[in-house]
Amino acid sequence: MDILLHPVRMRIIQSLMGSVPRSPQGLSELLSDIPRTSIYRHTKILAEAGVIEVAKEQPVRGSVEKFYRIAAAGAEVSPEELQSMSKDDHLRSFFTFLTMIHQQFEDYLDQGSIDLARDGAGYRQAALHLNEKEMMAFAQELNSVVCKYIGNTPGSDRTERLFTTIVVPKKKQ
Image (cartoon, rainbow, N blue to C red; front, side, top):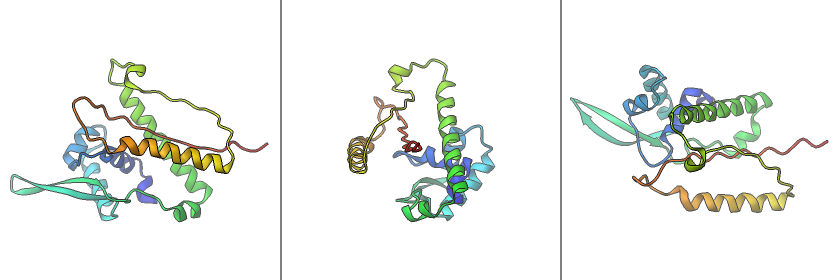
C-alpha cells in the first residue's frame, strides 16, 4: 500500500494508464516538474513491487531502454487490504488521490486555451438516495458504460480523458 501512496509514484501510475507504454525518459518528459533521477528511482520501485511491468525493450546506443505499462492488477488494492487499512491510512490514501487529481486538473488549466464544455472537463457532485440493492445496480451500470469505452486505443481523433469517481455515503444524522 505504501508503494502506491507516494505522490510521485501515483503520478507515474496515472501516466501509464491507457495503452501507451512509456520509458522513464518519456515519463520524465511528461512529468517535467519531477527530477529525472526521481522518475527512474520510483519507476524501479514500482517495477520491483510488480505494480508496473516491462511492455517492451528497445536498443538505444549500446543499452536497452525499457518501456513500462501497468501490470495486470498491479495497481489494484484488494478488498481485504482496503478493509484492513486504518482510518489514518484511508485519509492519507484519499488525500494522495485528491492531490493527484488536483495536479491533473492544474495541468489541464495550464494549457492556456481551454473550453471545459468542448473538452468534456468539469467536476460535479450529485446526491443519490439509494438502498444497498440500488447502489449495487448503479455501480454495475456505471461499470458497464465505462467498460464499453475503456478499451479504445489512442487515435488522432481521440483525446485521452481521465474519468474519476468518488462515492462517499453521507454521515447519518
